[in-house]
Image 1 (cartoon, rainbow, N blue to C red):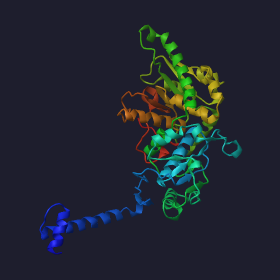
Image 2 (image 1 turned 135 degrees about the horizontal axis):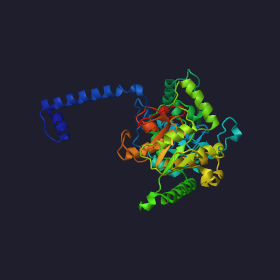
Image 3 (image 1 turned 60 degrees about the vertical axis):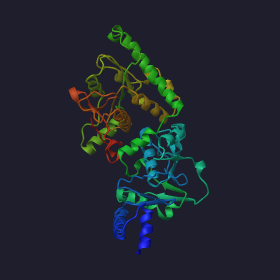
Image 4 (image 1 turned 90 degrees about the vertical axis):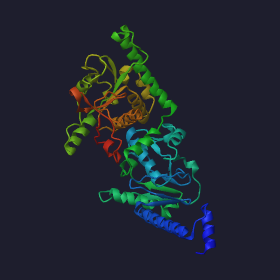
Amino acid sequence: MDLSSTRKLSRLFGCFFTPLTCKCCLALVTIALFFRAIFLHSFSGYGVIKSNNLRLILSPSVHLESHEGIRGDKFLEVPQIVWGLNNQKIAFARACLTARMLNRTLLMPSLSGSLFYKEIDLLHPISFDQVFQYERFNSLCNRFVRLGRYSDLGNQTGKYDLRKGSGRKWTVERDLEQLKQSSRGPIDKYQVISIAGKNPFLWHDHWPVKDYARVFECLVLVDEIAKEADKVVSKIRRIGRKLRSKTNFGAEGSSLSHAPYVAIHMRVEIDWMIHCKKLEQRSRISQICSSKQEIMERVGNIVGLESTAIVYLAVADSLLNDSSILDSWKGGLVPFEKKKLGVDGIYKKHPYLIQSAIDYEVCSRADTFVGNSFSTFSSLIVLERTQRVIRMGITSSCGIDVRWPSYAYNIPGESNGPQKWMTNMSDSNLKAISYGSNAISC
């Protein structure tokens, strides 16, 4: 390198260096570029997605980070989502996270209004936006996941049918590799990837609890359903205020503006008891089923629970005519289910899915919630309540009183009451809070 070229290079850096200094600088730059190439090469096994000259490297936990957000011109289509409300919420979130990994917009799937899933004509499909707010979802989940409508589709590169494997040979690793292959190359050129076969709830799980929680936070009920839940909660609190006014609370001049209530997801119907007994035998775990008497006793022993409290029982319709669920509660606990509360007419207007959504809201808003840790319904409510507590800066309820406490009545806790319950948000997948699993972390 001659002196004139060295001076030109030095001017580029805004100062004048000697030839020897410049050679040292160039050597350092060359070394830096060499190590950068080695560093990037080490990520080659993680999978790479290319989109519009943007190179995205997938981390080992399959997170996709894009400063540009999710692509709006590539889509993922999934089968109709079925089963109970919270199984459907998990299936929907899993579909969203699959679309996120592929850097695609999820085409708005159909939910199922009924519990029938073997007979196609009894599925009663319900559009997602009849239950949850579509625009609100995309606003809250902006740059994380994206939901699209079929009207967004053009006639660009057609549809690719992707069939997931099944059986024992279709492992988590094989499933993940199939998704990685679909995120690049010829398959990624298609405008729509359509996954055929199983309900997304049955897909292999590749995402941590916190990613599911992020999606769940974006699910906001449409106003019509939220207002129905408001009516039920208002009725519970109104009865609670009347009850408190007849006790020492009113005599001592305590505020009656907020009447706290306890919500219990009471799983004691026959089909559940048959299922949980079989589950106990298979898993060799004895703390899954709970009798009515056991639930009543443990709830009555909750430390710090007000001596006089309204108890809302979220029970199956088959138990509404069973008066025994309202009897033998500890003094001061006044139980109501939707029929005794006089709100069963609100529920009867709607299909099963909407009824469950209303009950979910009523339980989620309760001052104290008690459920079964092997129930998906209970587990997702506790997940939501755990997030509220974490936002207050509390990561564990062990040894302290927290707002919105949750308990699992199927596991004995302090003073023979139910075990305190918070979701472990650091779990690597949702198995810990899925149907048939147990996750207790006070």
